[in-house]
Amino acid sequence: MIIKYFSWIKEHVGKSEEQVSLPSHITDVIQLINYLNEIDEKYNIIFEKRELIKIAVNKKYSSFYTNISDNDEIAFFPPVTGG
Amino acid sequence: MIIKYFSWIKEHVGKSEEQVSLPSHITDVIQLINYLNEIDEKYNIIFEKRELIKIAVNKKYSSFYTNISDNDEIAFFPPVTGG
Amino acid sequence: MTNNSPQINIKIQNEDFDVSKEIKILQQHNNTGAIVNFVGVVRGYDEKNDQIINSMTLEHYPGMTESEIEKIIVNCFKRWEITCVTVIHRVGNLKPLDQIVFVGVSSKHRQNAFDGCNFIMDWLKTKAPFWKIEENNSEKNWVSFNDSDNEALKKWEK
Amino acid sequence: MTNNSPQINIKIQNEDFDVSKEIKILQQHNNTGAIVNFVGVVRGYDEKNDQIINSMTLEHYPGMTESEIEKIIVNCFKRWEITCVTVIHRVGNLKPLDQIVFVGVSSKHRQNAFDGCNFIMDWLKTKAPFWKIEENNSEKNWVSFNDSDNEALKKWEK
Image 1: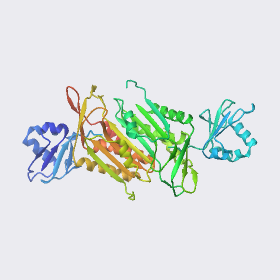
Image 2: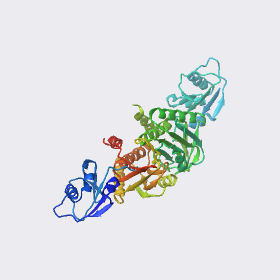
Image 3: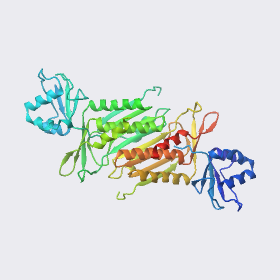
């Protein structure tokens, strides 16, 4: 699975994307977030304000409860500021 | 007094403007219209649908009851179609 | 620009205009974030009379045109925070696809620019003394006023 | 053009754009009477943090950006009769007074073009995955989302 980070989330994680092998028991976004938080506390700072984080699965806006699999591309980013 | 005509009104009158010496008893636009109609019936066709005619006195939108004097510039035109 | 009062540019001309150039002028204020502009284009087809239009000729009332447009812009400034307005209206003979009118409004924030531009166009359509005659091969027709343009003004009543 | 379905042009690029050229493309339909376009400009002053901005850098999410903008445009077509839409958004480093975004909407009648352009800008502001970082001499600040942009969407609810 590819995980992408944008804006200040990218800076906190220290990379714009990473490859993660998804354990088979993880089936939705919220489980992925909890899993990342267990691996490394650098993710805590990002996900402690979960209500502010936007999620995309395969480049579509998604929710904490969107189902995911190892072939998916997940992205975490703050609210957008273009235009 | 200068009287100006625009659009199809200009075509009916046969000129874009004319100089008229205003008789002293004429003090507003409606009196001017009645006066013109008496002089020449070419004006009838224009003023028979008075509710469709727009009036300007000295380049400002005015009404049938706007006061006028011999120094004024009066214009008669149909509703505008620019833009 | 140090002058904080809104800038007004009004041009009545036969020549075409360059929208990019006009936008460069509108964006010269350091505080401008949004420019909304309207470009009117001569249509090649007259739906009302179901016929092709070969060309059109626009006449106007010099002096009154400029002052009516200026009144509209001043009213616009009373309702929204605007930095700059440019109105260019062409007169004379025009062909289908020609640009006919430009209304550009700049502001700090976009909704003011959208509303200001929309407001100016609606009032220009009903107050600025221009008249169009459409020409095809066989005849000339003075364009008649469109009642929907009076309807459009109702949204500014509140 | 004989094709009656609305045309969509979406470009994400670092280069500047020429509004006149984009409008020429939008006005190529014989049935287009009105083009409304929005040009966003980089402001030289950050009101929230009360400081000068020297430059800004925009990043985006390639692929998702284009598909989100396309969805917005398709929703726009469902609500209004539109002939053509062009959206250009710049990314990378930009300076104050630079053009940053262009949204151009053409239609037979002006109110559809005004509403369509306003609608696309409002949704682009809240959905298109772009992020700005503002740079001055001493620091860099990621721009934070503006709640007024969510407020702006309410006018499209009805």
